[in-house]
Image (cartoon, rainbow, N blue to C red; front, side, top):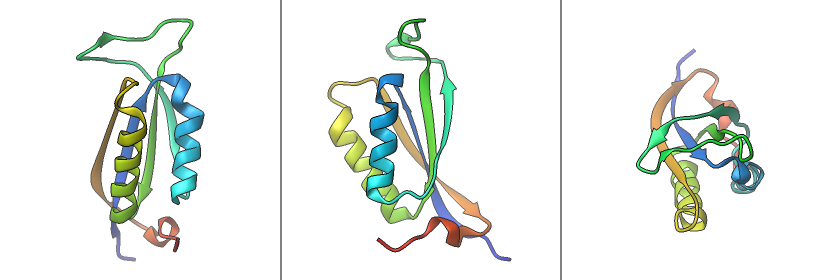
Length: 103
């Protein structure tokens, strides 16, 4: 087996955005995701209260083209009004065909 080079897109966002972000991933063509509750500190300081809950980290593995579309659309919809970070990295994936479905 030979690995396929894909992109891992990571979104770290306020918990309230969880369902909207997952719906957007599916809408644009991501075939799966991993969700983790996270906490940390950044330019806005530490942010996590009992009421709001922890931030969420959503990871998805997609084609380079879809990674770019996801990042553009998430940035367009959320950067102005929400605390959110999004980044991508190249990953070599075994069984990479699982992550590449025609749209």
